[in-house]
Amino acid sequence: MSWLRRIFFSVSVIMATPLVHAAALEGLFEIEIPIQNQGSDERSRAIRTGFYELVLRLTGTRDAANSPSAAALTAKAAEYVVQYRYRTLPPITLNPTSPQGTAIPPDNLSTEPKQVLWILFDGETVSQALYKNHLPFWGRIRPNLVVWLVMEDLDHRRQLVDASLPSPIVDAAVTRARLRGIPLIFPTLDQQDQATLTTTDAWNKLNTPILKASARYQAEGILLGRITADNSGRWNARWTLLINNAELDWEHAQEPAVIGAEAIDHLADNLGRQLAQASADNTPTSAVIVVNEVKSLEHYLKTLRYLESLEPVARARVIQLDGQKATYHLELRGTTEAVARTIGASNVLIVEHAPNAAIDPAASKNTVLNYRLVP
Image 1 (cartoon, rainbow, N blue to C red):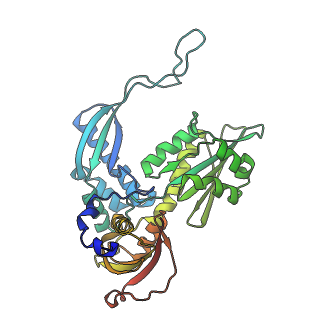
Image 2 (cartoon, rainbow, N blue to C red):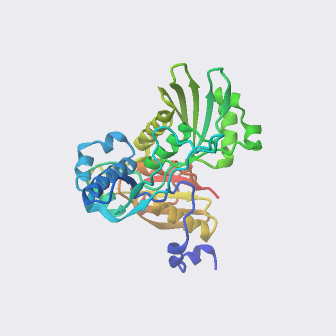
Image 3 (cartoon, rainbow, N blue to C red):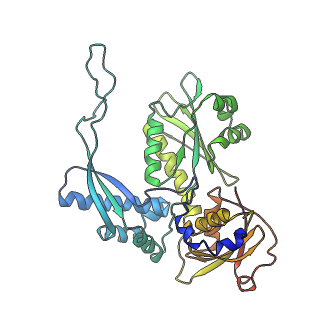
């Protein structure tokens, strides 16, 4: 029995086959908010704060999260809560001991355990509320970014930053990336990295060695930061985002603990504008997608599950199988442009400009997208 025929005997397998790709964000609708106590007023405040952070993560941009429509939803935040619980954080580890053996706490840092409120919001209800209010929605499919940082001190000495070592810039970037839902990958800076990308290459923004060094991390994008200290205690940062064959450059000057967070906010806003999509009206749209290199039942299932996981896609079904080519009909929540942008943010399908031959006539009225499955 060929794999094409076996498809029709294996529908139940689809639900059991895991979808594996690097850009599927976990815990999308979960938020943790620091709290002072477990009183009802403090819990209500934390839920509203958490919902605002969730809207910021889902809409993709600060402008959308601060809009009147988003504010109206935030005012009803408690209605979207599925579950919550309190969690006590462990005491903060102090700095290494002094020569006299006394622990030295960082300035203005309490060693008392902290409490947070963990909140799980109803993903489907929140998603529909955003669509209903014509707010953009950015789901689980998000580009992984490999991050290269080069620091230059006051003596003009430069080095690639090892993210495993304490760094206020890295800490702030990681914290903000978790809030905004941006998956970051920090290089190991082992011998392979050092042989492929030198500090000078990164500082001079030489794309060829940067792309070569990044390839091992299988990321969909690259964030390059070149950060210089000045005599005022501020740091000047120049950032470059390389993604989807496009380049975005920006720069700013901030204190070390602010630079990392501001960089993530800037790139998240830009990615959100590209990848989050809003429903302009309630009229359903559809598209046809042709995928080549579908060579087995496993490939077919992988492609179908992937298409069904895309936030702009309400439903996906196969309408034609021809050799190593599978044609799917997509019912959309938004536009075909949103689907194309979402697919472009991952490494599962690669766009192809193939002729739309031998497509079911019933599908020919729809926009047709052509892709190749990545093995």
